[in-house]
Each structure stands twice: as structure tokens, then as C-alpha cells.
Length: 384
Image (cartoon, rainbow, N blue to C red):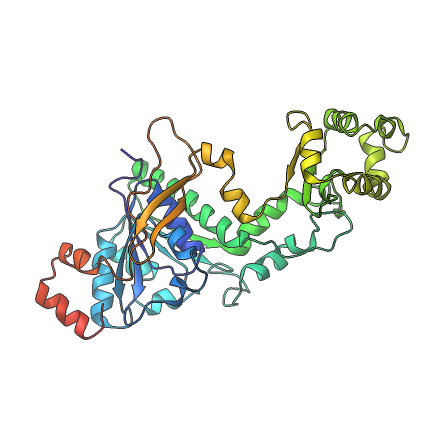
């Protein structure tokens, strides 16, 4: 039995943070009803090819027009029968649609209500709009370069959306535990900017602890990405002293460890530009394949910089059982990445494919007590 079996989630979110949050809960066994707009499929199903399918497996879909009184009534009944509600509307919108926290707790005082928004429900930025890159900017994360002497740039994955979804799932699990102990519901106000400020704290230690403005420091010149002779990229994670010693032995440059400029971690940081220039030339002298043969991954932290295809087809990834092939309606066979934690007591598995738009509307409405005739009426008026 999965840990969240018999826990019901109603998810009104559409973009990425909310669906990613509820996908974690669904993977862990929760029954998740995703509410999609009636009338026509939302653009989020096709905006980024494949993304919808990867964050909405193990869920059921129903369509609903929340701007109608009957739609609000159905939503209220769903809330009454659910344990958790997830939404990512801008502050005030859920209230206008009749699914705000005050409405939800009247229908179900024990509801765990998770509201994910850009800036939270209080503060001067409350009504401001934003996207991933804006929260990265305001948190200070976008000001930090990942590599020495290379200007900061936007990450290639939506880390704010994903981090916020994960924080949402963690908060919901904590609220479930509290409800088990105290019998009370919970309102969760999750700000995406807050999530990034929390992450940024790991680089703000000198300011928060010692009151000193942090410098744009890097752990090591060799905690970096270099280009090889054949134009491929290779990452080095040579930070600790033992790895530095192993590295100079592996590349046949013992003289670097004996050079007074580089003989200590402090010296290597102080002379970072000089060391980077030397190592850059060294790494460019051999192909990636040659470096793979020369470097011992047991003693030198290195890795080729994979493409998406290489990463998803890596032998180790396959051996870990992270990928599962499933049959989906309309697409055929697809591969999904499983929940990335292996438990001793139960296996992780994809129990149902991502749903078609409104696929489970009739099933869910019948469970609420609606007859075939009533459902036909609701469909005719595009309430569902």
C-alpha cells in the first residue's frame, strides 16, 4: 500500500508549480482530481511538448466552468470530499471563483489548502505578476555566476517552479501529519519568491551570520566546465585537497601541486585566473574519449556534459529503474521518469497514464451523485 492511498487531492492549478506538487502526491498514492477549464483544452496541454504528460500521470481529469453557479456548486462538493486543495491563482482570484480558503473551510473545516503564488498573499508585491526568471532576479540568484569569469545567466530548467512545487508537497505532508495529531486543517501560503530567498540563503551566509556583504566567490577554479579537443564539454568537481592531488597525478602535472601559487586551497583561490588558464589548455589538449580513459572517476570527480538524450539513455539511469514505458491514449508508448526515491517497503510505479482532457468527468460526477441526464445537461451548457 502506498503511503498516501485514500488521500484525495483536488488540484485547480494549470501551470507547473501546482501540477508538479500534486504529481508528487499522486506518485505517493494520493487520488488526484485535476480540474481543467470547460469549453476547450487549456494551452498548458500543448505549450511545451511532453511537459503536460510528465507532470500529470497518476491523475484524473474533469472539466469545470468555475464562473457558473453550478460549476461553483460542483467544486464545493469536491472540496467537501477532499483532503487537500492545490491552487496557484493570483491573490483574490480563487475567492472570486468561489474556491478561496474561506469558502473551502466552510465546506470542509479539515481541508489542507495550499496556495502557490508568485509573491504570497501579503506584502507590497502581493498583486505583482511574474515568472521563473523574475523570482530568480529578485532573490539575487540571477546575480551569481556559476562559473568564474562568465556572466550570470538564466538556468536551463524552471528551478523556481520545480522548487515551489516540492516545497508545496513538503508543506502538505507536514499539514497532513498535524491533522492526524490535532484534527485541524491548514492554510498554506507558499510564495515562489520566498522559496528562492530560502535557497539563496546558502550563499548569503557571510551577510546573515557575520554581517558582511558576500563576495562572488567560487569554491575552486576546478569546480567548473571545460572544453575538450573535440569540442565536447567536461565538468570537473575538484574542490577538496585529496581530489586536487589525484587530479594532478591523473593528468601528469605533479608540478602544479608543487607550484607555490597552487599548493594550498587558499593559493588556488587567490590565483584562480592563472590556474583556470592552465587547466583550460590542458583539457583542450585531449578529446573527451581520451579524458574518459585518463581520469579515474573513483578518484577524480568529473563527468561529460550530457545532452538531454544522452542523460535519459545513460546506462546507470536505466539500471536505477528511473524510466518506465507506458501506453497513452492519442500518443502511444511514452517514457516517464519515476519519483526519484527508492523505498524499501513499496515500489514506485505509474498506475495510470496522463489523462485526456476531461476524461474522468462523468466518473467523478456520478460519484458525486449526478445522473446521466444531469451530466448531459451540464455538458450541453458547457458547465463541464
